[in-house]
Image (cartoon, rainbow, N blue to C red):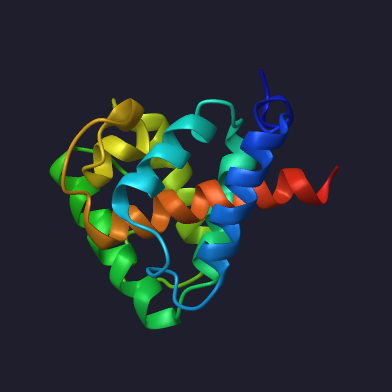
Length: 153
């Protein structure tokens, strides 16, 4: 099953459209909660290939202020180092959305629980306390992936 199939029924399409609208309105950390971000991400992520994932992550980072991107870069690299992962360049202050999206792609591939494991959201939607960073990244990736599917219909 691919993303198009996942969002093929009217209920799912409406639910994800509403979520993406709220994500895109205002600040990237407002309009939805951690549980909703985790739920949407867990459902959509498993049907994304690596390129779809990276495009959605890039679009998520593009919505952020450069200062927030640098902060997330430092934190993601710190968490990755703690788990023995190498996410490429050791430039903790990088705020390039493409570089950061590539780092998330690597995290998704290297971390045993995927991105959720790294962010504290657990693999497959479990776990507690992923915090604002997990909420924003998981919610953003889910919203941007849904938008891409809707745009290409």
